[in-house]
Amino acid sequence: MKKLSKAYMVLVLLFLYVPIFVLIVFSFNSTKSRSVFSEFTLDWYVKLFHNQLIMNSLRNTIIVAVIASVSATVLGTAAAIGINNMKKVSKGIVMNVTNLPIINPEIVMGVSLMLLFGMFTARMNLEFGFVTLIIAHITFDVPYVILSIMPKFRQMNPHIYEAAQDLGCGLVGAFFKVVLPEIMPGVVSGFLMSFTFSLDDFVVSYFTSGSTSQTLPITIYSMTRRKVSPEINALSTIIFLVVVTVLVVKNVIERRSIKKGVKA
Image (tube, rainbow, N blue to C red; front, top):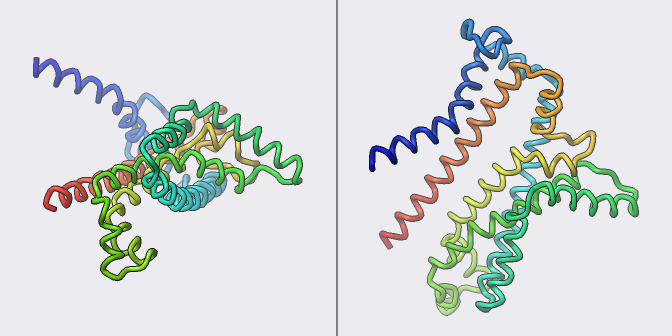
């Protein structure tokens, strides 16, 4: 039975990751062939960084991801603090409402945000662009931040904030000196998750971006509609490595926080 379960896991992992490894291998192929590997080269990576359209999209993606993830982390942390201080029934209702953007299909969120922004842009003479794109990313990032921080509040001693005040800390000082260090692993995990989701989001970005604020996923989609260039293989390889690095850092932080909790 154990051998069968291991074989099943191997098949699942192969099914998930073999296409990605094939993409990575052919990003170093000297020709444009997608079936025959000729010889190793880094030319496609060099051409990638000289492609002005991709570089502009990369800049837009990083700007949106950084601003959205930082804003979502601040808003999500404040929301988690408020939710944690609610009564049990109210907390359950608010958490269910908070989880709706996660449960909802992205197409529903993308279209609804497009209609909402369209209503405001028509009345205020504004255009779709960085502002609408960043607001949209913050909208779907905040729930993930809250979900990352709430377990840290459950692990924390509920009387530690009052104890800090009894020992002379003010309201703000007690939060920054006692509460924030306790929930910091959750805050960092929420930030990394927000950054990752903003980095590779396509559906919501497609409906809320303007002509001057296209992100990498949208640019890749428009390029693949014509012909798949090996530059896209190189770009996808870089994105994959960045996302994997972020997830590894997130898991390391979570494991360290768990070990600290066990030792304490």
